Image (cartoon, rainbow, N blue to C red; front, side, top):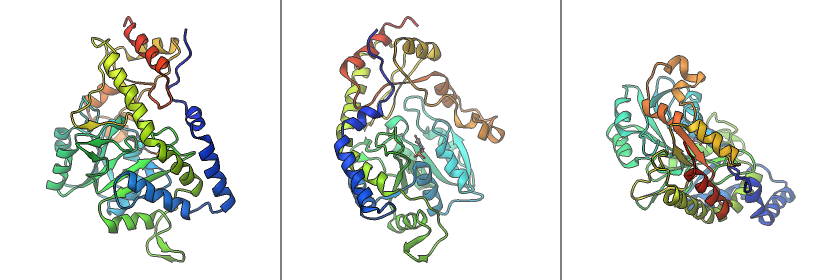
Length: 368
Ligand SMILES: *Cc1c(COP(=O)(O)O)cnc(C)c1O
């Protein structure tokens, strides 16, 4: 057997920029400025430039980025917010955290992102907003979704926790939503050394509002204009993120090269469904997911060959114990089918050509 293939290897990622990161962390330690300050401001402006917008607001994590966006939009008790059934639970948790009600809609099979027709059927008189998730790093069918939101005067939030820098028809993620939320959880495409997140938004006044909300409702030290939160991104995380952000374009290129090899060379197409990239889309491949009827057997087979895989996600949100009392009877057939059949293959910038080859060979040699 050849060397094992991990699902991801953050140690290798650190090793690839260790000197820069160590210097950045040391700089913050010497400054003893851990909350706010220049490091955080610099990261916010560099991340904004990456997103091709004027400003970004950093915060504690991706979940809080969604929650703060909802708060800034005034969404709360009595409001419905439509979210896809196939996503990480954080998307819906943020809705509950502001006192609103998540309404689960089904996803489309090709991309596992919000299905426009299902979205339309999920509209209620209480619907105030839609959260679209760019799952696995590919932008959802965003144009008709944005159009539907405009027609029905709904706010649109993009959950881009898995999609830093993804593009569609030349536009970057964040081009459509009133707010767009990012996560810098260590395993995301841009990962901190702990929890961190950020938001960008279309409306300058509301962006200022989230900037206040995440810092005790203030702009000035002793003047609290709103009752807010302590949801800040600290300077150590900002310093690490500044280093990694410089490398992100090259890491994304490497992810794309791996994904393109998988797409070209995996030929077990009678047994595996490969991800479909819609024309005009440039995914960032946070995850490369295949679908397979015998998913658990395939996972086992790959594991025996030393290849680690993941499942994103085995339980759709409406069937999660946390929501099943309210939504257990709901039927979201596509989300359910994806949950049963999806398998995520290793895709990370440092994976070697021979490891990629071995994954492909193993898949092609699988007897099913
Ligand atoms: C990771 C993730 C989040 C939450 O981000 P955290 O930084 O872990 O709070 C939200 N939505 C999606 C789709 C995610 O993958």
